[in-house]
Length: 78
Image (tube, rainbow, N blue to C red):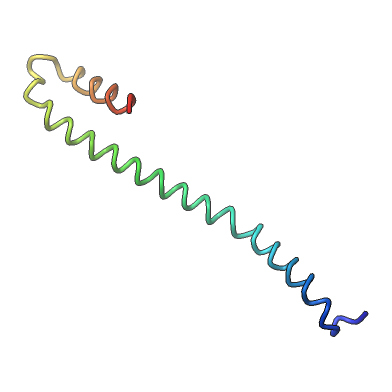
């Protein structure tokens, strides 16, 4: 059986495709996860800013540290 025989190209191609998949697939899925977490972090920071604006009038009554604690508890509970 010589390398020029056409029947060897099917298993050889499958093997090459498998090697390429094993090499590139993890980074593709990892990049997707990193992007998803970045979007979630950005959304969380946006919500934190909106809550801080909404609760700003209560800061003199409650205290500056308590507002952040309330925001953290709210965001962690979601």
